[in-house]
Amino acid sequence: MSDPMWAKSNTQVDAALQRFTAGDDVILDREFFLHDIRASRVHVEGLQRIGILNADEARALDTELAVLAVDFSRGDFVLDARYEDCHSAIEARLTERLGDVGRKVHTGRSRNDQILVATRLWLRERLQELHAHCIAIASICVARAKAEALPMPGYTHLQRAVVSSNAMWHAGFAEAFIDNAVLARDTCAWIDANPLGTAAGYGVNLPLDREHSTRALGFGRMQLSPIYAQLSRGKFEMAALHALGAAVLDLRRMAWDLSLFTTAEFGFVRVPDGYTTGSSIMPNKRNPDVIELLRASYATVAAARTEIEQLLSLPSGYQRDLQFSKGAIYHGFHHGLGALAVLPGLLTGMHWNADRMLAAIDPSMYATDIAVDRARQGVPFREAYKQAADPALWEQGDPEASLAARVSPGGAADLRLDVLAQRLEASR
Image (cartoon, rainbow, N blue to C red; front, side, top):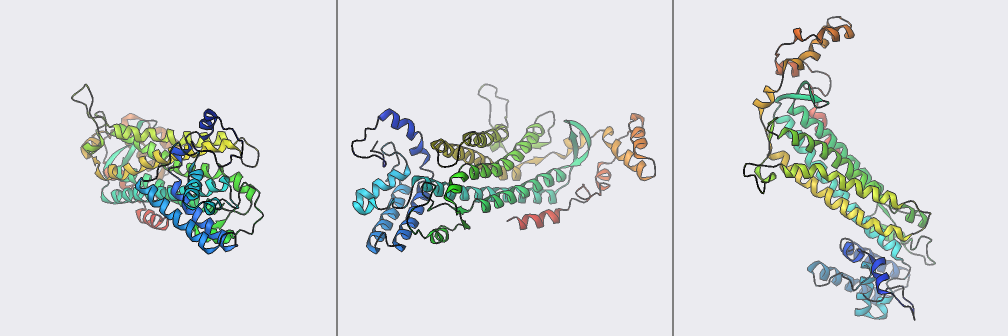
């Protein structure tokens, strides 16, 4: 590893301690490297605007930063154990190419605001990706709810309860993912604050043009207080993971349903062969492994949020503990977004078995209809409820008629899919 950027003359750096303190940074920082370069180019512009760099110096730095971005993207420059982190790698490269001009790039800046702005830009992209996934999932659910309304059992406590339909099932998850899209969009707007120029958390004695950097990086607003910029690290990451977790939580419940519906005992749903795997020993098996892994995905996202929350038992100001937040957001978003990306294809390709769903509707599931019908005729509902509990009154009814009678807003006869479609459009 090269000498750390903070090393002074006669500094002795213990290699084992250096490996411990650097941790996984050079691996994780590959995810943030291009964002750090982008912010560095804007910082160079800012230094020129206040006269710290002349035009030739700024041009040389900007050119080398652009070349470095290309080299990194092509794999010609590798962020590896030679460096402490992405920040030191960028400065080392600029110094190697430009000498003293490269050494000027860190003027008025700290690694604290460097990583803040790089991760903020990265989180903004990931939340936009989350928003797109939620829109795609909700769109498919609305379309499938419009396309078919096949009667099926509705369950409470995993027991058959009332007549439902696959249209109601799709509509329920459509509304959930519309809300998730709104949450992702609003969270993205909330964290869209520029921390560049707050340095180590107390500002610098330079008139940095932070309004310019805010515009240049496309932020919605400037994060004014340097102290709050440090306080927001972890807080903003938790908010982003909360938005991701809300979507993956609904994914988990959907996957739970599908894991049941695809069993031989239910037989309600068949998923495309590409979403199943075989057994290594049992030739007859067709396992819904993809669905099971989707169901498990929430654990990784929840663990990431918990990890950051546990880091935040800290006083104000920067603390090195926060270094570990990078791994948490990377693993949480990498896994959560990967799971959500699988869902549209699964939802589009799965097939509902109308015969099996219809066969699973038994006479007891019309008891609620009997109770409500008698209440509508004037019988006090509690008395109607007692009467309808008598199995002698139960007989196999018409599931289509039961669904058609469900006229309360959102019920089977009034799904309000037009309203969901309008909300979906508004959430884009």
